[in-house]
Image 1: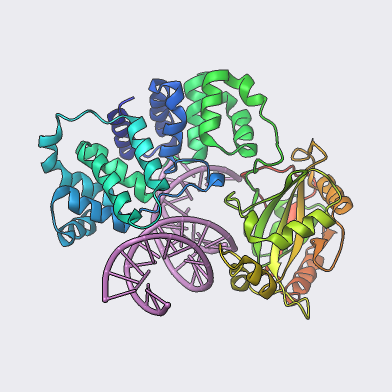
Image 2: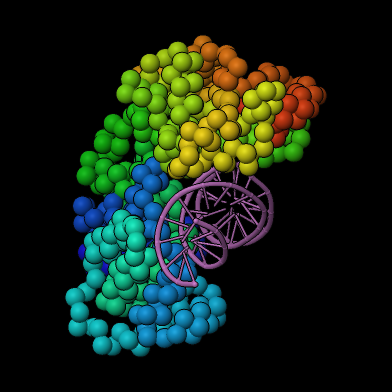
Length: 421
DNA sequence: CCTGATGCGTC
DNA sequence: GTCGGAC
DNA sequence: GTCCGACGACGCATCAGG
């Protein structure tokens, strides 16, 4: 497919703001896209090249894009920068400044979606000495063969400012509309995406195998699940009221990093909140999980917190961040010891727990996680009394926590959604 | 070697 | 993480 | 209520250039 088709659709999307209209326009594009190119389109429209958990990065963003525009247009960097400031985004600057040049390059091969994607993939894979220069050359070659409109959206893709009002769920809606004829299948598709968050894979599966293929997607240890998020509320009363004036579970909210822990025979994998693989950062966590999680295969969630080794006190988030390094991991491990507070269980012994009510997940969690100096199920209180929650909150703060997370005991794990508070 | 610029992740 | 806007 | 985008503080990695 020609990239011009994509760019023209983006341009249409830019002009509208209603969600329904956006979805319809996007669906039209999806229908026109050859099946093997659907993943490419899905990723690029999200400003990505691969799902988050594969960690593919361009290493080229706003500043370098400005330099590329300068070299491609033959203008000075100052001139480009001025246009950028005037128009407000780098993509529009590219569109404006490369338009004069486009006359001469109309004879070149029209850009295809594949070429744009493959070039950006190449940019992402370029490393080492001279790589910054090489990345810029790749992008420049693309812009040289692009129409002004194409240049605009290529640059926006690169700088992560596509801003079409299209994020994951809109794409899923558009897919449902394009391949099923209505948004009716959306809940199933959403569920599939949340337990296998690779948008390209979901879009292609839907197009090729239909809803059947989507329904066959299962929770798999080793494939990250989109995390359920919390919502901020200020009073215990408001929380209780929101959850329906019944018994809820209140848990410590610690000032650390959220880990999704996948334990298998082959070993343990750690995913960050954005589903990046961060296994290598926490060798000590791997050991703690191997020793203290009494299940051969499991997906658990825990907050990892830096601690004072002598007192066991929790340390602020910044201290933990020293652990997020590529080199000197062993030293950092000694210098910044951590503890694990487990707060959810999504799978154990090949059984998917995501559709179980929270109370049952917690019970299983408690049966699986051994309480040690460094590991425990996060402290939790069950009550329907706002005053008790307030008191528990004070305990939490006194124990170095940021506050509480309150959960509906009957709530299932709604991956990717804001649910409890 | 060191420093600054840039990019990108966590919260 | 927070915030506000749009639907 | 949900989704989306814009924003900030902080720490680390990478590379360019002296």
